[in-house]
Each structure stands twice: as C-alpha cells, then as structure tokens.
Length: 367
Picture 1 (cartoon, helix red, strand yellow):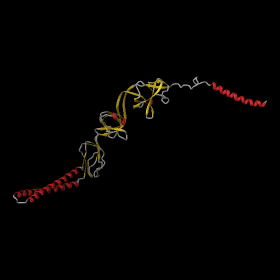
Picture 2 (tube, one colour):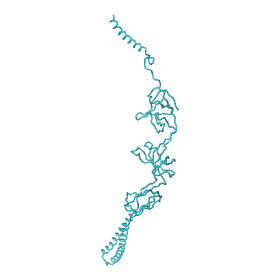
Picture 3 (cartoon, helix red, strand yellow):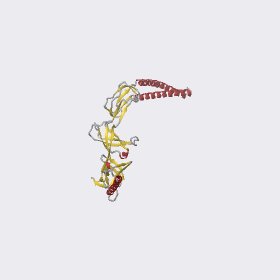
Picture 4 (cartoon, one colour):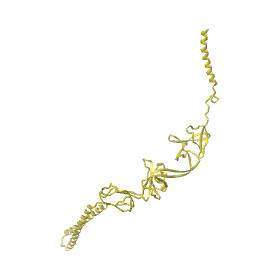
C-alpha cells in the first residue's frame, strides 16, 4: 500500500502543472482582441506650411587690400651706388631720381670716342678737299678715273668710321642712362634695403613704390557663385582695427576658375579711401549675389541627407511622404529649396529620426 502511494503523487504533480500551463495560455488576452499584434498609434510630429519670402543671397569671404599700383625698384645693370636719394615713406612724383650707379669708366670711354670723332672729322675734311681737287683734275684728264675713285673711297670710309664711332657713343649714353634710377610713377616710397656704396645687381631691391591714394580689394568667390558676380556690383568689407564698413565696386574678374581652389578671383575698386586702410590688410568681404522675392525657406534640420541626395518629409493625408529636393543658399537656421517643394506644402520639422516613408503621423502645426 505504501509503494502505490509513492508512485501516485509524482504523476499527480505533473498532471496539475500541465493543466495550469494550458489554463494560463488560454487565459492570456489577445493584443488586439483578434489574436494579432496591436497597431502602433500615429507618430506625433511638428510641421510647418511653406510660404514664400524675400531672400537676399549673400556670402562672406576673406580678401586683401592692394595698392592701385605697386612696384619693386631694381637697377637695370650691376654697379656701385654713388647716390641714394630715398626718403623712406615719402610721397614723390613721377621721374624722381632715386639712385645713381658709378659711371666713371663709361665717361672715360665716351671722352675717348669724342676725341676719335674729332680726329676723323679733320681727316674727312682733308679727304673731301682731295676728292674735290681730283674731280677737277679728272675733268681736264689730269688724273685717271682710278685715282679719282680712290679719293671718293677714302671719303666714304672716313664717313663710315665716324658713323660707327657715333653709334658707339649713343650705345654708351644709353647704358649710362641705365645707371640712373627714377620713379616710374607718383607714389609713396617704402623702406630702403641698401646703403650708399653698395654693389647692386638687377636682382637687388632698392626700395618699393606704391600708389596708395587709390586702393583695390581682391578676393575669391566659390565656383558656384562665379556666374553671379558682375562688373560694377557693390561689395562691403571690414578690416581689423576699424569699426567702419567700407564700400567697393567690382571692376573685373579673372578669366577662368582656379583649378586648385575651385574659386574665381575678383578685384574691386575701393571708394573713398580712409587712413585706416593699408595695402596688404586682411578684409572680410560681404557680397550680395541677388534677391529672390519668392524664395521657399525651410529649417536646416528638415533636410535628411541620403548619400548624395537631400530628402524632406511632407505631411499629406496624415502620411509622411519622402521627397527629394535641391537646395540653394543657407543661413544659420534656414535653407532655400530650389526644387521638389511648392508653396503651401506641409514640411515635417521634428521627429525625423523616427519617421519612415508612408508612416501614419499626427501633425502639430508650428508657425
């Protein structure tokens, strides 16, 4: 009797456990009342209705101030300085003598040639007199034609020699003119780099001269804005050390895009020079590229990058519809949409990490 009881209780325990598991399974309620998964509620998102507004497309780029003209003053020939007439920082006129090189050897050559010409001119006078007498004698057959021809040849030879000597003198004078160094135009002198008595060569920089009464502004604009830059267009700029905003007018652009930087060089003429403006100064240039009276602007955060594409989500009939767009200029908060968007569309502006195409949404409009 004890043996039968020991077998009975384990069998009873297993039976009750199985029944209990089945009862729990049967008792578990369905998630949707029909035995399937419960449907997710619509995702709440913020959105805005797209309107048009006026947009001024402007960019800010670095630039540099340039003198209207700026030249390094070099000697044309090598030699020793015997005169240096440079007052640093002075404003001088065109043709001012700045320096002179030693010309003693050339002066000696010039004097020697002058003496040779004088002797040759005396010889020429005698030869011309002989030729004149020979001509008379030839008429009365006092000399032969050959003798007369020799007298003419002597005149011609001496005349040619005098011509050569004079040409040599002109060459020496031309070389002597290179020993004098003059200013090429009116302007302000820079610092001198040499002292009197120095030996200089054509590579030596004696000083610099710049026209600072008229300054230029040079800067580069990105390639995509190159076609928007026009001659006569106004630009504004500022420089360090001054609170003023200065104005300039575009005078020219480079004829091609620079390959390494993919930018276009632009040069502008500065209006109303100011003492605060110095050649070489760094400038922050602001250029307005145009105005759009009906620009479509949306928040920067509304753009969803996808590879090389840019997507936005539109709210239509409580559904999220993905749309590819092309964009234009942007500022710190908004970006211009050029295509893929129309006035009156509803653009989703929040919850974009959780929004999926064609997902159910609940739209909360924001101004």
